[in-house]
Image: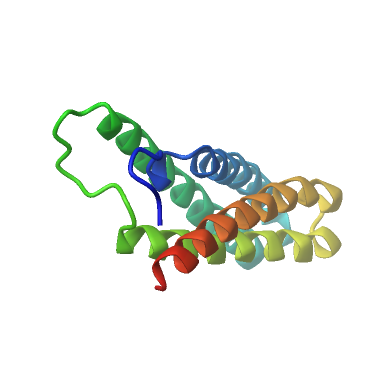
Length: 145
């Protein structure tokens, strides 16, 4: 559990780094999904669907990071900043989405027409998954889920 005076979990540097990695990886994967449409509609749309989920996950966590940073300066905060239940679930969902995106990109490395280019978003989303997994496990061990 966090000590009084610590930075709220959503306002940590790890949360910001994971959000930015998700946004950049999602945009890269979305562009590659558009380029892979020549292989067929299903592969291209599947790639774009997972890329959209990755991008939205990054946006949600970036918005939450901004809200938490703003709440840190509020003299009378109206939201609970420490050890919230949705925080643990959101980090778990972000880990699952980013792992799915990384797996899909590694799979498309062999199949897609833009093979080597799929490794860049795979690396970014895998790094984001590791960041979220570290944040989630720190929260779970601190609160006992």
